[in-house]
Image (spheres, protein in one colour):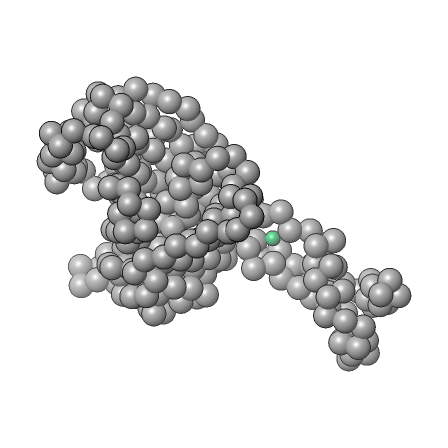
Length: 287
Ligand SMILES: [Zn+2]
């Protein structure tokens, strides 16, 4: 089971969130049959999205888009209460660096991060920032500083079985500096981050969320709540039926006459829904 641990550190002047998201990222790789660069980038995005979701109140929905000009194309994530779903334009990207490691920077490219928050108020809030590196972690560190004015640090990682290219583990962390934090604490954190073990190594070694927090804080932390993280799509045949209805009677009759059925695949979970001739006749009748 994937989960996230929240904690305080530096005398309660910083908040830290650490998550292991292995099950979620493996699940995404499986359902979309994703190649290494695509799932490395998307796995990182799913992880930071789950953490962001935990920073918001229950019931608030985040729509997160990473729109880079690299071959992966657009990445989309929807997150609510640490339940996530999403997809990428191109799941089949595998670029390698000279040393054979997986390249995600080129695969993501440059462009924009956009976040739309539905906080159940009258309006939805939208904010954005540039993709500065394409490694997702530094891009979101930049996003938090620029768009939310919260000095932060993000670490993300996905580790692979180099023979099968399957995801072994995934996870990450977010540190947020709260207003009024003493400068000496910020310097202490910066020093620590400079020598910190790479996130990908930590998760490869099987660190739990608490292990990650322990590593970053040298054991000086106060644990707060934990939260379960899950990949979950709430699609149903009924929802797609409503979608079909919205295209109108003329278009539906055309589908009925030409194809005798309609096949719809959910973008978020790759599940196929088939509407038979009888289903289509019923929908047209209901109109
Ligand atoms: Zn679905």
